[in-house]
Amino acid sequence: MNRFILKILLFLEDKPFKYLTMKKLLNTCKIFAVLSVLMLNSCRNEDSEIQSQETVYQKVTVADLKNEIILSGQALPEIVQSQINTSKINLEKHLKNELQITGITVLGKISTSKGLEISQNLISQKDNFIAAGNIVEPETVKIGKIQSLNSGEELNIAQTELKNLFGKEITVDSNVIEISWDNKGEKFTSLCFYNDSGIIWDNILGGLIMMDQRGNAETSDAQSKVSSKWYKQWWTANWLWGSKRGEIGYKITIYYSGSTVSNVDVSDWGSISLGKAKSESKVTKKTGAYGQCRYALGLCTPTGSLSFNSSNFSVSFSGLGSNIVSNGTKSLYP
Image (cartoon, rainbow, N blue to C red; front, side, top):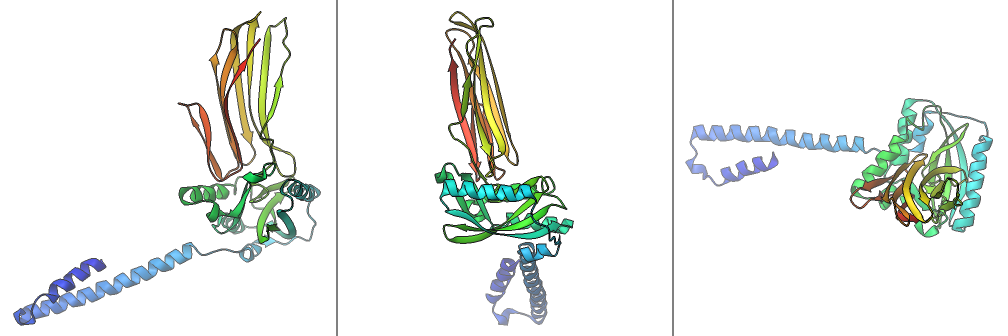
């Protein structure tokens, strides 16, 4: 609109005043009057748009959340206190106190849907802190503001996935505490939601995992009567307090006579609490001197994404999140 008005003004500026008749002069004045109204409306619209954007991006705070919380003088449930204490021990063991819990403040119970909405916005705001990585492998750990660890579409995905936890996992009547952290001298806080069964979610406690990257393996003994043999390999992800959170794996079984394989079976599995998992497998050699399969496995925390590529039979990870991906081939001999 402003460009159109400018063009008209430049056009009129080029016209000598002496060539304007009284009628044309009146018409010109009318044009200026219309242009003045248009310019005024344009400025008002721009101001309204700016105000609207400021409203949309207005930041919420923990103080806003406290207005929607029922205060509780009760101590933390024993299971929640135990989970926090054990997490402290494991963080100290693997990260050598680079990341520490320095304090806990009990806020209370979310009592309204507005409180749920505020909580949702609080944990997904771009300047809120989040963590990702396997503390057993300290070099994989990343801690920082959501916007500093993500950009573009990955930032949108991370924020959306964090918001999706609400309504499904975190509901009205969920309890919340504020945890104070120190990461290599940088201090920040996180909101931790829990119920009587334990911790539901915290951007730091839930964003990190404990896992042996080498995984586990088991092989059956050859049995002459049934002439079969199997091999199983799997990876287990644990919460920071030690309990199992998720697992991916595969199992190959060969059937044989003497030294010749006659058939092969393969199976796979994958699951994780508050996250995503994918598992695929297929037989690539069914008879002969050995059996063989391919497997594609992956799991991650909710702020990341997994995809399976059937052309090269592999799972890949993208985004921000603790994850384990294993793609490979396994051969099994009689």
